[in-house]
Image (cartoon, rainbow over all chains, first blue to last red; front, side, top):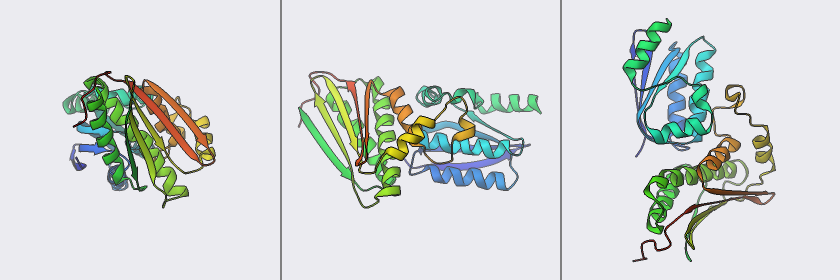
Length: 116
Length: 148
């Protein structure tokens, strides 16, 4: 399955919807979207990965790159993910300590609201 | 011992094909369903690393993947032709306690190999000036599905 990307803003939070496979072939498109969003002043990103079928280290690199960019503007990049096979990759690489990972968009929005 | 060999050009689009082939053969060989995601990811990581290395050093050379059913093990070997000293140096420098300080936006080979090591039941990495060979294996049923 190819990669589908969409995004919308709610208050100060930009929600990025990702569907499909994030690998060495498709990850550049996600990277371009994250860079574009940051360049346009969206510094609080929530990436919804609930419909992601596959994620490899290229995709992890893109997410880490996005996090570096938003942090340079005191922003945030957090994730929504409950899929064990995706979470496992974050655990293996120790990135669960780097990203805020939530069980739902609502849960992430609630936490984001508390932090404001 | 049944063997499937596949060679592909160093293009990112072909990595998905390699993943799909590896997963299909793993299933036929009798690898447990619960391990198939690990096979898919580990083979994808090895092929992605090889594609990135070839694109840097030898974009015209193909990458080879061998998939073997070997006495109750499903064994995958990914072989590239890119000199791997430089990549090994990256691997040695990788520190997971500070990923933000070191990770570029693109794949780091050491990161991919670390993911493979966390996934495959058995992994061996053979770097050399002539290229890198990554061999990994998982338990499989000794009586996997017969070839059609």
